[in-house]
Structures are given as C-alpha cells and as structure tokens.
Image 1 (tube, rainbow, N blue to C red):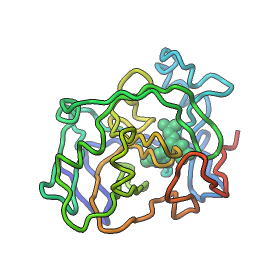
Image 2 (cartoon, rainbow, N blue to C red):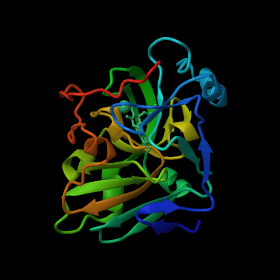
Image 3 (spheres, rainbow, N blue to C red):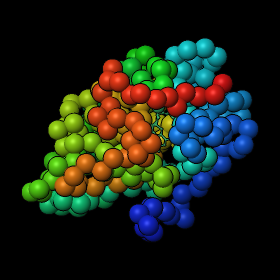
Length: 241
Ligand SMILES: Nc1nc2c(c(=O)[nH]1)N[C@H]1C(S)=C(S)[C@@H](COP(=O)(O)O)O[C@H]1N2
Ligand SMILES: [Mo]
C-alpha cells in the first residue's frame, strides 16, 4: 500500500471511508465534533456482533458505544493494513497484519471502561504487547513517550514509555472473540487495559517514539493525560440517547 502523509494525516486510496450518516452521528456538545454512533442502521451493519455472546448492541447496559471523531470510519482490508513504528528508534518498522499476528501474542480478558460511565465486562482481546513492538524497533536514547496516529486522520494518543511497557497494554487484532470490525477500529487498535477507553485508539496507523508526551485529541479536549481508571476526569462526553 502506498502511504502518503499530508499534514501528518496518513491516507491511501486503499482506505474506504464509510460515513455514518446524520441520523446516527450525533455531534456532541462538550467535545465539539465528537460523534457517538448509535441507532438501527449501524446496529444492522454490525449485526454479526450479536453472535458474539455479549449482545453488544442490544438495549441496556454492558454494550459498546461506537465512537468516531470524524463522522465516518475507515475500512482497511487486512491485506492492505500496515503498522508503522518510527521516531527515536534504532530500526524503523513497517508491519503487515500477518507479520503482527506472527509475533508472540497475549490474550487478555478485561473490562472496557469509557470515562463517561459505560462499561463492558470481561471483553476478550488478542494482540501483541506494545513492549514487544518497542523491542522490535529498539527504543533510542532520549526517548520518553509514544505518540499514536489513526487511519481516521484525526485521533491521536500518547503514553509514556513506562505506561506502554505494562503487560496489559497491547496492539490488538482481535476483540470479542473475532477480528476487530471496522467500526471498532479494525484491523488493529490499541487496547490500554488500565486506562479509560479513550486511550484505546482505533484504526492504529503509526507509533512514533518521541522525546516528550504529546497530549492526544481527547486530552486536548479536557481529559486526563494519565487516564488510569478511577482517576477523576472532571467532564463528560456522555452519549445522547
Ligand atoms: N480513532 C478513534 N479511536 C477511539 C475513539 C475515536 O473517536 N476515534 N474514541 C475512544 C473512546 S472515547 C472510546 S470509549 C473507545 C470506544 O471504542 P468503541 O468505539 O470500539 O466502542 O474508543 C476510543 N478510541
Ligand atoms: Mo470514551
């Protein structure tokens, strides 16, 4: 896949962008432009999900809300997916999905907790520890933190190197017992188990090793940079339902 970078946005003719539509994209008051996708249309689109055993889109609690900042989501085929590791590294890395999945994997069964209060218990995740990916690229002198970019061209996130090396911080390719769907950030998203959901950046395109923490999209909009579940986060992006 030819990746082009314009103003830091990774784009490619291989990436299709599916608009979620006015009816299901609700602009949020608090965090301008942030959308939470709800509604029948999307529920049908991800209907396969209902077979996951979690009943993720049935009315009531214990279900994921789909988030997208942009009002659309990128659909990236597994064959065209690439993960770039760049910045202060000894060996810049460009991985295919096959190469990522050939690395030693980690399985986690953990709750997913959005800062707004919704929570999905005992979600199954598979992926590669971020620590292992850092070792693959070799972190160089002076490195302090990671900056993450998304194929949506909008979301960004950060972790310190110490946070990134925790054993329950993974680059995930499976969620809820199957490949991560496009709506949930597939083929590859972050899963930062000890932190609120906004740290689990979807459609992960690039991990940059940097010399200072660069607060991501949600942090620039008021959320805590260190998003440990349980920490106080002072404001709400609660979905309108
Ligand atoms: N690229 C991207 N990643 C994202 C978001 C987003 O809007 N865009 N929202 C975050 C938030 S606030 C949460 S709670 C989770 C929600 O994951 P889900 O959409 O799979 O339910 O994704 C996180 N990762
Ligand atoms: Mo969230």
